[in-house]
Length: 217
Ligand code: HEM
Image 1 (cartoon, protein in one colour):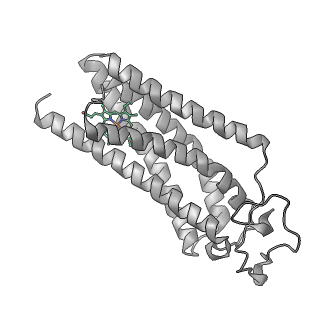
Image 2 (cartoon, protein in one colour; image 1 turned 135 degrees about the horizontal axis):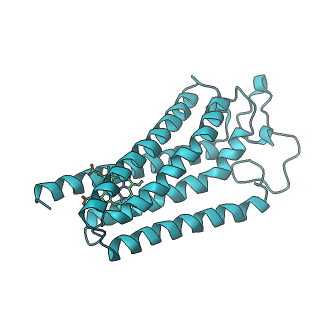
């Protein structure tokens, strides 16, 4: 499996990462073998769960007012969850970036990502729950952008999982440049979506909070 995750035109003999003589029966466009079919249903179920959680958070946030005290508790949880989840994301993306520069081993990123997953997804779950407690103003276009970014960053994380699985099946010492071009592009796009959506959500959250305080709410 791992041998096929290389650029068809750029096999690296030194690491043994050359394209196999016989192609896999149903390779991806990027030269990687088809991900095992049974796993697909799991990712679809996870995406549906995210969508449900997101819609539920919005529905509750729009319709229930828990009062001032609960708002304070919700906001504190919101910030704590943000630190937990985004902190873990930053470290994972940073080590991924170092691998990209050839300064870290591919398996460093795998180990770190596996350890960080509960923090990232647990933090996101708390962000959804606490967001519902602090009365989002969904008529505000900035809030609408933020909420779309929240959904996109979750779906992006799930869509990337099978790709990461194939990537992490590669032997230790595999360099970014030895990976198929289309797969590299996919990784970079996913990284940009992830960082773009996280930073937009954070900045919009901070901006809304500040504007609300200035308005004396
Ligand atoms: C990736 C997910 C999210 C991130 C990174 C994020 C980030 C933030 C940040 C940085 C703040 C400012 C906190 C402060 O200093 O006062 C904030 C506030 C807030 N967030 Fe989030 N948030 C996320 C998800 C959500 C969700 C899902 C909801 C609603 C369903 C939500 C609703 C709110 C509300 C209502 C505020 C208060 C803004 C105000 O005072 O008007 N957030 N968020």
